[in-house]
Image (cartoon, rainbow, N blue to C red):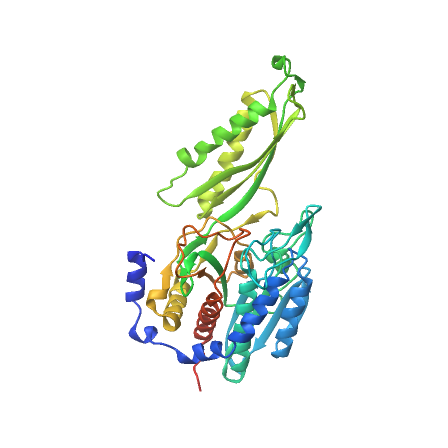
Length: 436
């Protein structure tokens, strides 16, 4: 895999001591690999949809209780929180893992492939861990186990958050990180930092990737209803055509990114994913509905793009004689930029290099997908770091393998070891642990 000059410079700037191997972390993880792998395979075979992670939550809660954590369940429907208080004073750290699967029918030939079914939007669907949340949960339980074994000499406190509904709650329900915050997950625990990770096919197994600043985009959903006046398709001049007006809005909105955004600074992505209008080929309908998403890495550019989208939609509709109802953005359907605190990112990078070696710690490309993880840190004004864990086998091309959310998404189980070692080392160093 090609490394950017920034990655090389970042690694070379680290001290010699930071590059030294840390056998204690490796040994702690190695002793738990059989159990971590077993948990992951069990979760992979039995995935559950968002806000329905009942079995998964029971597996997590049972393991945390066995390890001696103070466990709370039922947060944001099925969320599980475990708190471990170290034997020495120190900072408070949150480690978060997501638990939900996707409405995807698995097509990977594995002995533990999912055959699970669930209900999504009123239909029976296959369910699969097509985004690797089984890996996140199993690895984080491995970290929880290792930390528990060091409890007597561990500084500070650790909160392990196992979050439901990262992929988004079902229609008409609340869920995910926003609901955990709303229900007071941090009422009695004020973290000094938050860590999260995500396995992805973008990188080879054995590697991790991170960057300071925005690593994943904000995500805003928008909805527009264009109101015209229904008439016969043979006499469109007797009505107002919302389909033509809507089509003009779609095309005019493309200039927001290409002509109004300073893309030298950061990228912005505007996508219309739904255009729904009309019932019959020869009738100009009364209305048409447009829905889509806006992605950005800069808060100011995000706000400007949303304002410009409202402006374009209103004026183009008016130019056609139509009216428009706007939800730009749709309330409670947004994720902020997943922002890595630069100073904390430098510290975490040093920890990852320590345990994995400098050639295995890459500078991540920005990913225009979004996450609700930053909702947690924003709610308590605490810095956070989020890193990617490579899951593609070393002999395969990361540009051609099935990507996250594919029914053929495959994770090399070596990612379990890499993710667990990386998160454990970053956590121990942040807490200030030193072996007795």
